[in-house]
Amino acid sequence: MHGTVDRTCKNVRGLRSSVIAATILCGVVYLAFPNYRKRVFSRVFDSASETLRGGFSISPAEPTSFTRRSDISLVSNACVVVEQARYLKNAGGAHVGHWVAVLTQLMPHFEAVARRSSNAKGSSTKMHLFFTDQHRDAWQLQKIGSILRNHPYYQITANAAMHGFNIDVILRTTVLDTLSRGKRKCRQSIDAGRFPADDTWTPGLHRFVLGAFESLGCSNNANVADILIYNRKGTREITNTRDIADYLEHRNYSVLIQTADVLTPAQQVCLIGKPFRYIVTPHGGQMASLMFKNERTSVIEVMPRSGVLECYRYITRDYALWFALQVVSLWRCAGFCIDDARRNTSFDAILRPNDGGAELEREIRSEVLTVDFIGMKSLKNLLDLRAWVQNEKKTSTVREHIIA
Image 1: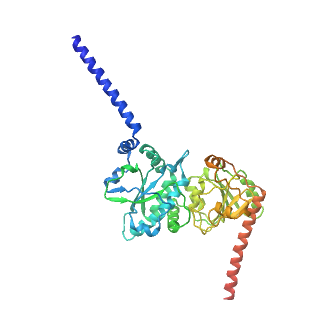
Image 2 (image 1 turned 30 degrees about the vertical axis):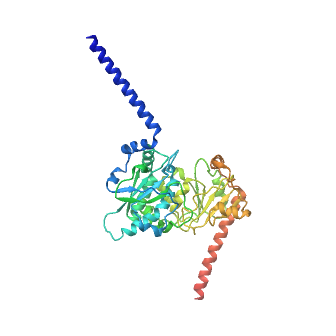
């Protein structure tokens, strides 16, 4: 009897030792082979598996800032890889600025798909966006995808694609290494970490913006103020908006002050789309909604005192007037504002050192902003000059009509 018990105990101890050894071995493999870990997680969490069974696969490609419109017809436009997806998430949730950067790169694809399917009547065309990142595993990508899918800005832009182009945008997240099977190659790759460097992406913007307004039911009331001061809370907040408004209102300009943080994304889009003559706004993520601004509205971007920040200049058309205001300096940005400031030292712009590093950039981004009296005067002089030029154009048109 005792011999039987001893043998049983030995078997249990042996089984327990085997389980412990196997667990340790799995842990070592998990830590030592990250690519294997990604493959294991991807089988559990890969939300793209259903589509892949339908015949899609991804051909790894280097991310590009833009896709030339002439190249679009050569590839599958119903499948696009969005790399460096980590940029689409920040401490507050979805990073709206980087999402709009993605949209600028998707716009030529929307156009191409719409052209290709224009002869087909009835159902919409599906466009699959595969969000991936070599620095994130499948679990982290699922988190990013969940944040994006539930974010109102993504929903607004997905509805805009449907109303403007009859395209059903489907967001999926996956580890790139797992997408090597299927019959149809997804060769187009765009980069969530890049902002546009010119406005070559904008031909489809008008349809997209109208699609957004239609889906949101934005009013087309043209009776608005001359100037919208579009502020933000926290870092880079303009602290003296009321002083700026009083200064301009005393000089016969109507001013509306709004803070992006207290508006819903739908309210932001509908507000920015109204025909203001100028939008004065600090550098920041709230500028992403400028994609939806009126074509005739000019932008005045208020920069931090310690340096000029850049990235949102080309989320709108090139011919739209764009200005930079930094403390007392005001200049027109023909291209990137920082490039114009470097070329023309008479602007007296304060530029951050090229070797300042990430820490200096964080310090600049953490500033609060003020526009002092000289800056307000420069702003007012700009408004007067633009009003004079517009009046001269109207007068010249009337004279030509009378002479004719």
